[in-house]
Every structure is written in structure tokens, then in C-alpha cells.
Image (cartoon, rainbow, N blue to C red; front, side, top):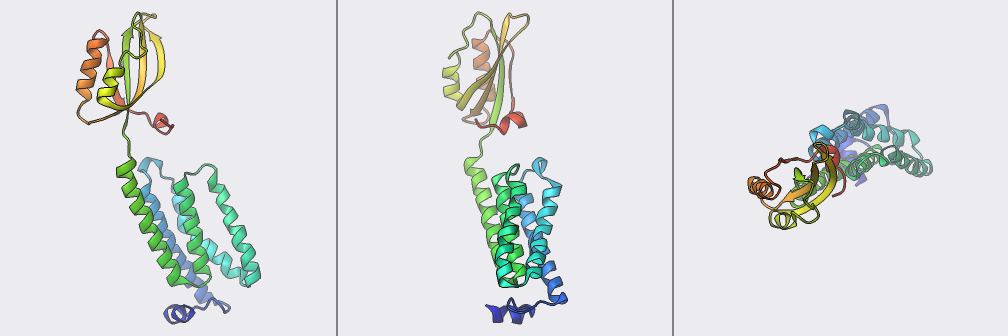
Length: 233
């Protein structure tokens, strides 16, 4: 492996590195960071993306590579690797699991580039990026669930417990009552459900069936609010 690397890039992981080689490693690490940040953009919804995190993924491999290059000796390198990976703590608390995985990938790319294994670092980055994109695409199709918010009014003398269960069983795969409040001077109850429809296009049938049961009072079906959608169903 070492001979192949030296022939391709003129860089040896066992010798002191020059300024020219350092620049090559840094630029190569930036390219790897761009690949990883591109994966982040592909697997994260536009409204959830962070420009700061995007920039961090671009620069992190280059920064880690420089740290490894400056450390130099094998003993110190072992300690530095352990220390560098502690940096993931700055993202582990608020970040999602996929974000932490991308941080680890960026660090691995920077470590391998800093050690001089440029071909290997490129192969690792591209392979894992392809795996992440494939799993994300498959997971989106298999695991995606479209939640809806159903809000309706019922008369105060109607017992809301189980009154729509047969309709939910027919039209939905999930239905949960999570909010109840009185309205119109206490003469009506407003019920809010989180539901998942079995089949798209059945919204009107469900709403008409509910209207027949709640005395033709207001029924509203809408997309689930973002903050509620993030909660566990």
C-alpha cells in the first residue's frame, strides 16, 4: 500500500512530510469534506439544514489531517487520535444520529488523509457516502409515515371516548387523541387527533363520515405541524 501511495502522490506515511505534501493532504481532505457535506445536504431536509454544520463538515477533515501531520511521531499520534475523537462531543448532545455519523466519517477521512493514505481515505469516504445515501433512500420509502392532524367539533353532550373508533379503524393505520378543549362558551368540544391515513385520496370520505356523526360541525384535516411531527407518535 505504501509503495502505491508514494507512486500516486509522492507521499509516505513513514517519513517526515514537506510543506508541499501538507498542502496536497489539506486540499485532498477538503475534497473529502465536500463529498461528506454533499451527503449531509442530500439526507437532510432543506428547512433542517445548518450552514454552520455544512461548513464544519467541509473543514473538519482538513483540520484533523493537519493535526495528525503536525503530531508526527507514532506514540503522540495514538494519543492525538483519542483526543481528536473527543471533539465529537460538541455535536453529540444536540445533533441527530446521522449528523454524528457524518462527523465520525469526516474525522476518519481527515485521519487517513493526514497519515498519507490518500487513496484509502478517498475509497472509504466514497464507499460510506454511497452506503449512507442508499440506506437513506431505502429508509425513506420503507419507513416514511405521513402524519396528519385532524381537528373536529362535537356537541357537549356527545361522549367522545371511542365514538370515532370504527371510522379510524376503516380509514387510518394510526389515530391518537392528544388534545381536548372546550369552545363556544363550553357548548362544544374541540378534539385534535394525530392520524395516519391508510390510503391517500380518502380524506373526503373520512371527513364526510365524521360530519354525519358530529352533527355536521366543523372538521379540519391538515398536515401535522413540524414541532408536533418531531415528537414520537
